[in-house]
Length: 369
Image (cartoon, rainbow, N blue to C red):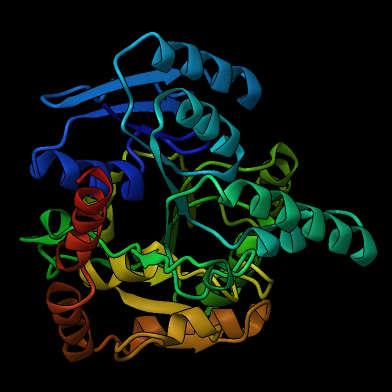
């Protein structure tokens, strides 16, 4: 039995479900999939058993429930986890069944600590060192490591004898093949993803009055869930104070399969990220999704945005509201269809999941042989 476990992603997560699990099913693997989320969606299908537990469960209690369920079923040959909080669970399963462990690293966790910790620099440093020591102690039980970006370092996997498999968050061809990019809502701007302060969402809202002063009918649609209730309140308050309610639409997170129509309907995709440890390393999936959907792109001049061969990207200095606003204005006024088509072709030819999914399949075949 192969089990895939996540504790902090939606069941229909792009990377875990739409890319990896679907690729495994397509290649004849049978998967037991455990998630912890507020979603009630059951993704069980031919070859796939999906079990979702409430997000109200602590990760510790969730791990106990999964361990109990796994231990009373048939032998588990491979455990594929998507968060470091699940390493202990995977090791306990390994001790019973001798299972192989794949540790799938989505983010650089040292960067997460430096970005989100409210403690001062000395405490952040100690927390980072403690986390690295803990990860290293677990890695002796891990068989293979997957990373979402070659820039992810954590406890320096190469020095510990690993050769991580890089599986970038490129989109799946199925979602953007046949998208109609000619019918765009005039002067429309879109963002989708987590709504949180480190992502520059408040700066984007503050930029909109400047955009409206030059392009009166411009609209901004934000799809996503708030990481912090306090930030949700601050953002709603800012929209009201700036009198932007008619121009800014806040929408909840929607299933990944449904976002593509909205992306293809909008003219400009914006990535408003601020400059921090996390955004200097991770490449946002939405960069590729905007390209595939025929959006003109506005994004910060951070290293992850510059790793790929795209044309006509409109860069701004992260955190600079005026520059962000002017960059959006320029993007709306100077949309280049040639650049859009070039970028869409690059996604279809190079930067797509179908081109790299063989790395995952080869890894599974090697571990299970």
